[in-house]
Length: 392
Image (cartoon, rainbow, N blue to C red; front, side):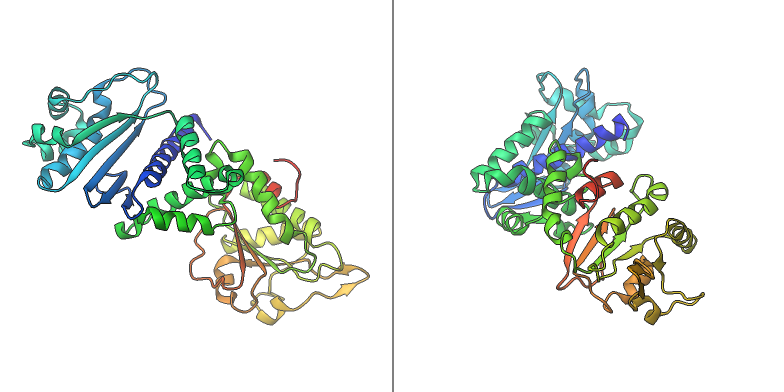
């Protein structure tokens, strides 16, 4: 991942952390909207609405007011359209060396006179706004750097009664994941949550979320180690039916690693005669890629049953048990495309269902199934969490 991508993710994580901070400080029944009316965070309570924009500029060498023109214009636009609403506008900003930031009528008028072409349409919409009225409900706050904000949130969770030993590896990463999941919902009503509901949801979670967000946290190593420990018990059982769906879209080196990963899983968890439950792999790939992977597995002496004795898929052939001859199994895994698996999902429910990578699993019935989501981007990290390798 390049440095620009790192900074982009860090910007989102800063916003998620600022949202978490607002949630933890809010009244129990205050309604918080992730990415609300002015983009980032909205906190509605009896006293009115607190609309927040977060701007994190860790790499900005020098502060100039023009850096903040866009969020200022966005806020003024909303104020102009809602002059009688009980809304306070808050700009949370971070710059290196904590420069003094003062937003007065002078800076706002300069924003309205900006010649930045990207702001032209926005400026036209804001022209005529009551600047003095806006300044009465506008506040700017310098916020701590990312590491300090994260530590502050961890401390707040501890003060709210969350087990200190589990905050960094369970509750804090899951809190960030809940916020990240809410932020991508299209319906604004689905992006609303109260502090009480948020904390109740957090308390119910007993496995650590693994995603691009939680693995980008400073606690990444602890997240991986904790997830490995959480998965160990079920993976250590000899008789357990495991289904794995693999989404290649964001997996690094998918084509180079997929056959090696499947083989390493079989070598670790399906090599004994006592391993009687044949693992199933569902791949979200085209038919040509699927056939190529199946052939390569055969070349590695990892024989799959893909349900096609010749060309046509046979459900009976796919779900039959392998013949065993002198400790040698006829096939060691079932292999199917994800689009076909979804049609058969109710035929044979897994004990453990692993989601590897990032993909849509809606519509699949997971009742009475242990669902494990491993949204990592590297096979080395996935193998480490699943106990296949000792390092990543």
